[in-house]
Structures are given as structure tokens and as C-alpha cells.
Length: 112
Length: 115
Image 1 (cartoon, rainbow over the protein chains, first blue to last red):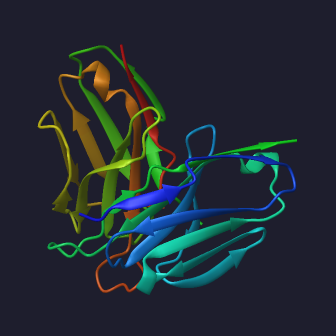
Image 2 (image 1 turned 135 degrees about the vertical axis):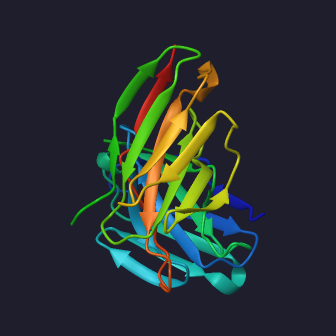
Image 3 (image 1 turned 90 degrees about the vertical axis):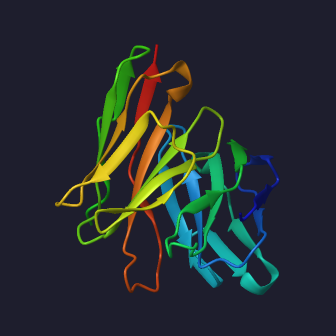
């Protein structure tokens, strides 16, 4: 099956700093999503980005499908950005359906 | 916009009891997925349904079963609960069918604690 690797596993930032999170995957995908899991456990959709570049406020993401990686950029980080960031990928399996395979996540702590 | 609804949000059960988790997908979504997230782990796929038929299966224990009903809501039934079943259970929904966008939307999760 598809392997998903995220780096770094842990990241500590001062408020206002910028960061880049990386997601490598081992096969072609038709779905790639970035999530933020907040301290209450909720998984918040950040981006659906199987290819290309998207931006949403201080966050942006780029997926280079041909090279099998995706990057999540966080600019001007805030304490509320703390939590775990997951990359998850999906491909159409033999059944034609699209379960997500998650990476192990990047645990981000933003200090004031 | 309507989101995925899960109930209950929290559930405490004793070993060997049964539990039923419910999921109400986003209206008009045709596919439901269940994921299990243990403490400190990433979410793991359990099972999915497309148009009320089981479409894919992951590492779901035989003690667990699930179904999708005619109104598209889904239930995950868990029997003979074990301490290791304590986890956060997510339901997600998407519009597959002929869709070209396969984004999954996650519910808030049900936190199951087995004592």
C-alpha cells in the first residue's frame, strides 16, 4: 500500500515565525488532504490538494504530484496554530474507492 | 453549511459491553468512512460504504460491524469491548460516484473510553 511520511515529527516555534511541513508519498494519488487536529481532537480540513498550489490566509500548500510530495506553509504563526498537522492521501483502489492513508503527523507547538 | 454529525460525542463503557456509534453524513454525499485514532496515533481506516453497500474494509476487528441505512446514516457497532478499543472514532463523508473531487469531510469524532 501507499506509504506516507511526514517531517519534521516535532516543531517548536516562537509566535510570528514561519514554517514548512513536508509530506512524501510513495505512489500516485488522486486525493491529498492536509488536516489540523486541535487539542480537543477535532480534525479540521485545511486543504484538498492532490496537485497544484492553494492559499488560505496565513496557510498555503503545494503538491508536486510527479515528484510525490506536498508542502504546507504556515506564516506568522500564532499560538492557536498549535496541534498536530496530518497529511493524508488516497488512491482509487481495486474497488474504486478512496480510503485515506494518514502520515504520522507533525506536532507543532507555538509559544508566545 | 451542513457538516458531518456524530453521536454520541463521548461514551464510557466497561469491558465486554457493546457500543453503537452513529454518523450522519453531509446531505447528498454518497460515501461514508469510519476511522479509528488511538492515543498518540494517526487515524486508521476501518470500513467504508458507497450507496449503502460496503465498499472497502481495513483492519476492523471481527467484533465490530457497520452498516449504512436507507437515509445514508451509518452505525458502527462494537461488541465485547476491550481496553484497547479506547480511541477517537471519526466518521467522514464524501461525494464519490462520478465526482472528480474526492475530498473527505470529517465529523467531530466520538471519544470512546473502555474501563
